[in-house]
Length: 532
Image (cartoon, rainbow, N blue to C red; front, side):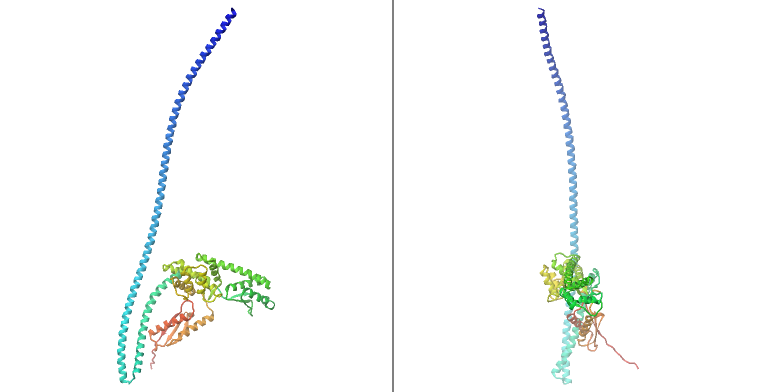
């Protein structure tokens, strides 16, 4: 029973424990539920609050980003507007510059039109004056005819002349009167035309000369090699002349060894071969080894060096005158002119002078200066090979330039016609002719040998003395002027002008000379009486 009671108590305890456990679980569940509900409610409130803050920040960021985008858009629009304004301003400046150039060109055209109108007016007046003079000459001829008829009748009546004799006398009188009138007319027209043409030509040429200056020529056409001793001359000649023959065969020149101490003369028309021979001889003399094999080696090496210098001289000249599109063969030919001289003037430097002066004259005339510079630079290219080919250097140069790619007709005509060998077909040919004459005749440009100088003086005097009525003729100022004295009893003032014109025409046609020659005809009448 006690054990039953104990068992009953233990059972009640277990039941109570279970009940308490269940109650505890229920209370815990309720507590957990309440805690969970409390926590969930708080989390929801926090989430709503945080969501509200996120939305607010997002809205603020969106507003800031929108403001930033708006500012960047405004800045980009301002920059674009400034760029467009700058482009518009540049276009306006370019348009203003174009308008200024067009206005300047219109002014130039207007001035040219005014000049042409003035010249046409002057020519019209001249034609009218000539017409009036022709009418006067016609009236004078009629008066002369009437007077001659009277004289004829009178002479037949008084002198008893035959009709043929009277006819001859009348013709002589008419010829004298007509010659006098024609001389006066020619003198007047010539003076007027020369005054106008010379003023314009003088202005253009002087402007070209003043805007270009270069050094005077110091080239020498005589090439010689200095020899330290007469023993070296013997070594150059060699045993039985084998060394000198080897030199002449390798270089193509003539070696002159005479009694002149310390020098050997090298003679050759080809200046490049002459340069090769001179330099090779100088090297051989300095080296001292003289035999045919050594001579051939030195000559070949020197020839290559000279060829390189030729090409370099041509390229330097082309760069200096700023020309493009020239064939390498043309450049090489221009380089050869560095070794060529004309009356002592270096032909390459002369070609560059003519190029610059041609450009200046063309610019002053409103033509293409670059084209004129090309014409002037290439005008003497034929001199690089005229010793190898038959014909004059203008024709040779024109054919050579055409063969190696020169297609501009103005350039080809300037090369072939700068000495009047062919008719001029463009304005650039007479421009090159003028620049060529200026370059050749400037002080220090050229010099002649004494024999040629004396020969020119004699030719001048002979031509002047060949005219009827000329008493004396003297060439003065180194052949730049010829003074002609005429018989005052046979030649009047107007006929003196005709004689001067005819002499100048013959000198231009029969003689070759640089620059120009002045012909001065003097007619003097002296009245002498003795007082006793």
